[in-house]
Amino acid sequence: MYGDSLNPTPPPIAPAGNVPPEAPSSEAQCRVDSLQAVIPQARVKELRPLWVTWFAHPFANWFWFYFGFVAALSGSNMKYPSLGPVVIVGWLTGHLVNAKHPWGEIKLLLASMGMGYVCDSLITLMGVLKFHEPAYWGWPIPLWMAMMWPNFAATLNSSMKWLRGRYQLGAIMGAIAGPFSYYGGVKWGSVDLGWGFWPAMIVIGIEWALAMPVLLWLSARWVPGAEISGQSSEVRA
Image 1: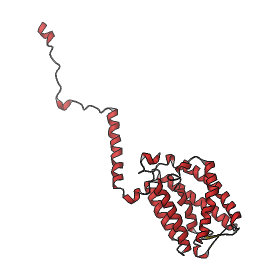
Image 2 (image 1 turned 180 degrees about the vertical axis):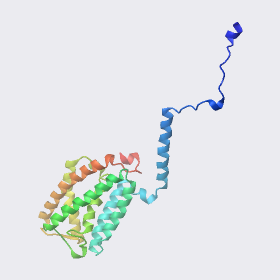
Image 3 (image 1 turned 30 degrees about the horizontal axis):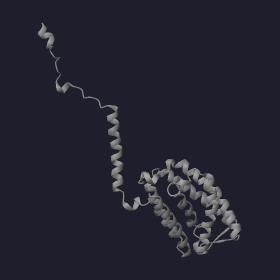
Image 4 (image 1 turned 45 degrees about the vertical axis):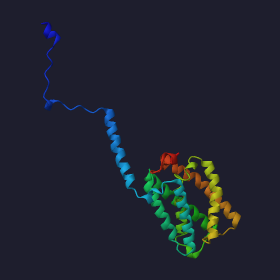
């Protein structure tokens, strides 16, 4: 009797084929899901061409913006008005490929182009701006002029991200930098100021003082976080 109590008979073991599989814990399942989500993204990033990743860095973003600006002005002056739009569309394509929120960026670019077309067309009809006949590709403003707006809007979530939420500062910068960018077109021989220097500068300054806060608001609304895939954490900071 004592032997039976000291050495109890173990319960029978069910056959291996009848043992139900142990359900994975929720923590383990989360790890598996995380790996499945990260590995394909890392693989896609490895396959991404090097020339595309150049658009992700803020310095590269500013370079392409300026390159598109110069291409538009020089193309209009050399009687190649399509040069600027082609260059701008090309670099904006690379920008969108790297964007974390591409649809938000697309909406921002299209909205900026529409707003710019209306604003610049208005001051052109008022006689503030006068475009030369060789550069006149579109009405009432050339297409290359309208493309300047999305060309700039593409910087708001990258090289100009520090302006995010600073609407008053954006209005001040727009009132100062906006007119002088138009004056650059005068120096390139792409446009004339129909009202003279200071009256035209004041009108353009008011235009951009109003436009910049709107662009910054649309950027914050449609592109949350303003992160560009391919940027390191140091760059994003």
